[in-house]
Length: 143
Length: 260
Image: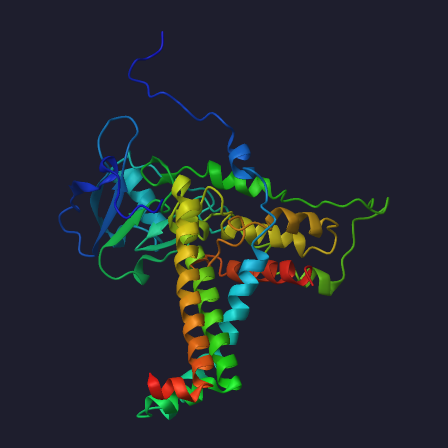
């Protein structure tokens, strides 16, 4: 006779089977390396940006637009924006891997990546708008 | 999922107080986690007032004194009492360590003793390490070589090759490191944990082993290996003074090296 108070056992899989699980996902190196490489690249880019912000302190709107239209500044700004949001996405994925388990894991990652992608795209479009609008003096005066 | 609060049946209550004998002058309080599977009660913390003049210098001496002379129901693992078997690994004053190597005088105030964190508890200070042992088994912690050893001697290693294993062969598998690691707490079902990864690197680094590539293949996983966030609790807590974080870092370096 089975004991009615005895809890129903749902997992009898061996510990070794659980430890081996589904084997190795053959991934992780790329993510790990991209996280570090983008972090290192962001150090000089962020430093450059801070210096530029101080240099532009008190500048008028046309002056800032002129600064933003220079190809070097546009390149640096785009690098900064794209790498920042790329790195953000890599880092947030780690947090989701750590703290969100089960069925919520995949949708949480997709939602996060969608939001970060849109924010990054918004930043990119803003830099491009500054860059392209700055080349047309007439519009600046009108705007 | 991360558990920020203990489940209802795990919240720890107040336990009994075992007062020291009258006349004891050098008394220290040991507050010890108690839980038994035999009743449906929640865990409690019992307080034992111990006369330090009557016992040896280590925390394990106090535990053995309690079991022999005060409360024989207290359950814990111990064997060698000299830091080589790893049985008496537990959380003492907030730090995972071996009771036999932890001097009582190093701890100020009351001494809180709990089982290794975030493992199922079998009873009192005895954690269930079956999962951790199975993870160790899963990395094949033995020499794998297709070249036959010389018929008349052992497999040879240079002095330099042998030196590569220093800092790893000393691991006694007490799992103080793995159970101190937040990544292991949150993802212990897939993350192998520092103890097992140290063992894995011990065989990757062994010049006599011929399966480093297979071993790296088996570890190349977002959680098995890369759930390590270099928190470094493992290295800080290791009662043998080893550096599992460094071994994990080496595995990550090798994973990158073989990609380029």
